[in-house]
Image (tube, rainbow, N blue to C red; front, side):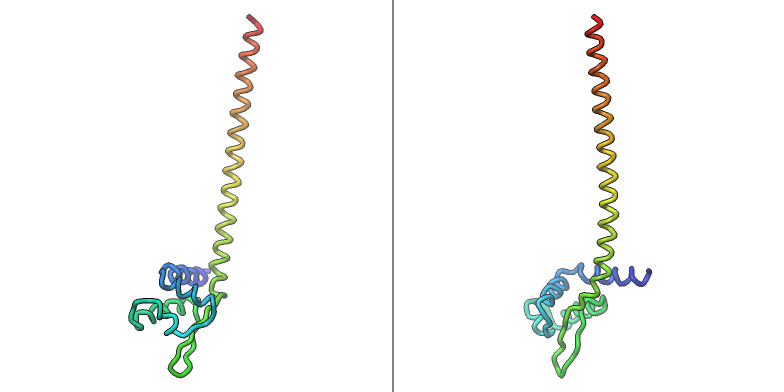
Length: 129
């Protein structure tokens, strides 16, 4: 479990940076060389490689070198842990919202009953006069 949380932390940390999110989005279209990935960004290649290394460490990106060209591709399995975590959080929040809705409905019914009792007392008093 601790290892899964560590991996999840790495994935969220990697995706916290807009440059890395842009790289992941570009890789959704297919594999690309580091040069192709770096082209739209105004930064030195060593700085860009730090982003690639973070993505590789998180497991989101796999790369391989062939000659002088390093090619990167997305590893979508790395997102399975994040997807599971989101589903668990969604279930928790849906249950909380369901309980809150039930509580609000209970309060509404109690208010309606109290109003009906006041109304019936007022009607009885008018009838007694």
